Length: 455
Image (cartoon, rainbow, N blue to C red; front, side, top):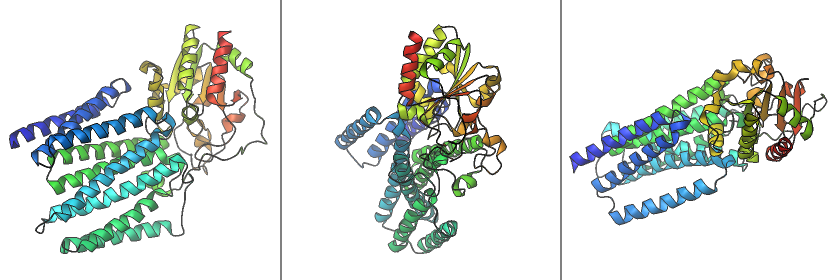
């Protein structure tokens, strides 16, 4: 049985690695997910059978119930709610790791080795922080808690104090493992720390927070793997932790901000501010005028943003793009790394509308093409096209690489109002003489444009 277990674990680890590799491109991402899921199924089933934890009846029951919950969530959760679902699932991963590590502690019959004790503390700590931090992220994204940063007096001082307290409690626990109160105290402090680490982070930084919490959940799982002496859990947790950290680094580079600045900078609003630039004049276009501009454009770059997801307008947008292509226009999509509210949000949204992958271009691939483009069509994007990132040194966006929408020959922005994005910064692009503002719900506006173009 031991040899078979090792072979299955090796196969599961290989599937995890190949799955991650395939996730690097939208065209192969679905297959990568499938391979990783098969690997996890093999790993969990083999562990339950090898350790004689459960018989086939309970394993099958768990698979059926879990699959039913997953299928229900996949079918019913709207694309706009995908970030909060991901945040919640990250939290479940952290909570599961912490609970397993704590359960293993309760079953101890003798003092464990030092390495097991340390990883037990780390698993409980990271898992608990991940759960409560993810819960805060979920509540912010869901609107249960306001999305703007919430900062208390001496906020970072208290965070540092709690980290020191955790280190002290961890040392005391390793010196006297029989004292369960130390481990319970770590759970209590980690609970507060999970809240305190995420509440000062605003909506503009949510993509980074989600990827970081994903990394935390992987690290917690890896620590639990050491507690259980389970190699496949160590490997899978390490892969998730590493990939989450890499993604976090990519997100930070996309905003030209350090991770410390994201965690402690308190940038962002709840995205619900009023029109801060209403004293300036904008050029507002009717549906008929906007349709004429679209009809005459020979090259169009579409810039999707969170407003597209809110309106669930991705399908009608792709229908409009297809019509423009039929009329002889070159149409491409420009994807900013932090557009939306989670990493890859726009890619997933557009994939749902069956947008061909070869129409999607990352920022670095397409940015130089804006100056040769007849029209940049912006749907619901804000911070990722704001020129303040280049010029306003006192702006929280300053230094963040943006899409060069302002360099296009003409610009059309579909937006509900002139309200700022999640960073709370007014967008000068709205008032540019070559910018055409079309106000309204993205789905309604795009549907009317499509009907107008069809004649």
